[in-house]
Length: 464
Image 1 (cartoon, rainbow, N blue to C red):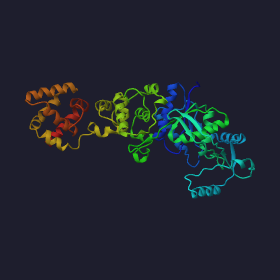
Image 2 (image 1 turned 180 degrees about the vertical axis):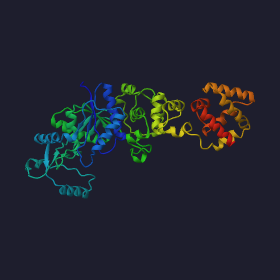
Image 3 (image 1 turned 90 degrees about the horizontal axis):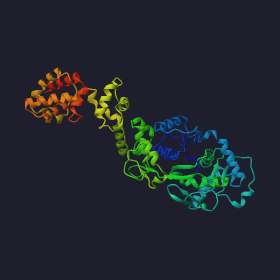
């Protein structure tokens, strides 16, 4: 078996959407699993729709996901002459012909087909008269001479696929302006790049018979094809902007971790086939990936699952890395050593780095107000107001501000006062955070430090 060579071939007409990213991920995993090559090709032959700046955006998104081409990137715009030569060779071989039909004439033919009640217009030249067409000094398109026999191929996902030959029109290879169509350029590129396997979306499966015909006409061995189902939104309709963010860049800017997004995308229409483990390292994904594991049914994009995965990855991050991920969502003046301590305490609660602003605001600012229900529940207990002043004085004299020492001190004081520790712990949490829920009180106090704790408790005492 030849060394596996796969490609991802985006068009720079928009950002890298989730569907395209899934195609790239499947190709990359297959290349790594088989010890093959992952290549990139930019399909930029449409000058009206292609935008050069989007190429860099797409490449940056791929790099963010950890995927780069194993060889220099191929740009179709550099290969226009290759496509023209291939089209002319197909004419010389009798597999294609020059079509001088004008745009106006094509429109008339379409209108006539519509008047006859035909669902779609298919252009097929009169085979008996093709040899009588004389060369003219005017623009022409080059069309493939489609056969009448069926085209059958084995798809890596769908198994045997059959297309009725007579249903294919004489599809255009080269337009009147000399620009190539997708069918011509993709075959030329895959042939010259020695691509062995084409893994792409289901929306391309109808293109495959046309491309196979070109391979057949040239006497070339085609690559193996595998068409993966589309990605649907939660409403089971094709994923689009109405479902929310659909591009990799949007998730990157929101603060999702690339490892989580990659892991999530890998499971969009693929399953390792054993166990129910969904958090897999890249090494595990490479080891387990196979085309046979790709589902025939469409994948459903569930952003809540991506959010859950992101939280799982955040929980596994070392404190220093997590602090770096949190820093862009906070004031630039935040000390990194302090932020690492905060990150460690909040790590189990975070699903997104941006949540640090809401979940942990009390680590960076004194609470502006206290939860009303919490005040009614915890501050109305006479034990807290009665003992808070003594507790503050004790803290001011307490030199060991570690969590275990702070806990032992409070519990000893509560025993002396004849009250339960809970009668002080809950109202103290409210005083320090403004909330009724937070990480462990004593760990929280240790990170805040004595000056901040004493200041906030004095303010609560004044409020009481």
